View (spheres, rainbow, N blue to C red):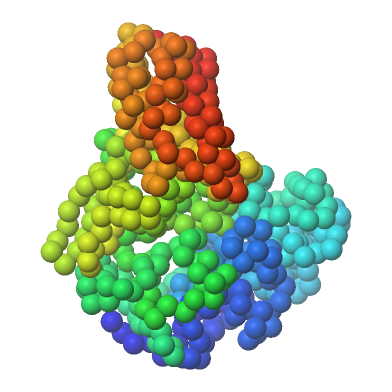
Length: 460
């Protein structure tokens, strides 16, 4: 590992080097509003929910990726190009066309949320897609979205403008009481993990980032996996997809939208956080935290996905259902890391659905989730995999519901029976998001709803 004297990145087109005593786990939001006094980036929730702190990462391929500055640490930002609202200028040096159009359409009002919305729209001009999805991570407190959408409708798309970037180098940043490692190969990562077994493993930071932003923690050692080449590999095969542990959700979503059989997973991924969160969050991180409300875990279980683990003794592979042990506990042993995941492709004609219930449709924590994959032949359910989330100490297979479905006729009565059997598979608790009684009722109804959804497709 190379010892770096400073964290360096490009801010608003200007190369920036930080003093060596700056904590690498300082959030970009805190730093922007502190040292350079770029206060256009606002602090709202400090947990990646409101979008007031949205900035844009300028990608090597010319893409623009909106991210939450409140979750992005300076150590993660090293070597990258970022633009805040202060760096947005028109060709004449005055306001950018996005800003002018927002004002002209009365989409600004108090202006607190406007800088973040402007940055999301600026990224959207290149990234494209559905505008409501692009703005789902930005909370508007005053105008509502009608004038904002009107402004976006008047803007023209922009082509990507690739920029030259140097390949990442393995570096270590040191600040008082802290070490922040940035390996670039799997071998380096495994070595660091074995040498520093108590270090925090950090990928996108959409979960762990709250410990920096809200709880003000300063961990002694952090190993950041974002530059590890092997963890960013994607391989698409006829049998399925191999997804590196550090591949962001935005890439996974594009793959699931394009690849046959994974449409159900894509439906869920569109609701996993916002574009800002999907730019940073990773499938490996969701699996590694082993949270019972991890959105991606029930789909992985329903697919029969497996995880490849790398460690000092080599590599091993296991099913995701065996990897998840208990509440926030996984099967990683000392010195091991998640390398990638294998997602088997559902068989032709299989029915795959991934549902979650939450208080809001977009960007909210799961109260109850259910993913179901079934095969139907000759009017009967030939195979069934059912997985739940948010209704027990861990995401898990619903074996009783599976048994009720397998071999049964493809009828409403079979799904009603599976919904009843599902009650024995789950152990919900009550909290602020939902009562235990609601979760039980909701899970059963998610199962029942599948009959109405799939029977309308004239499955035979």
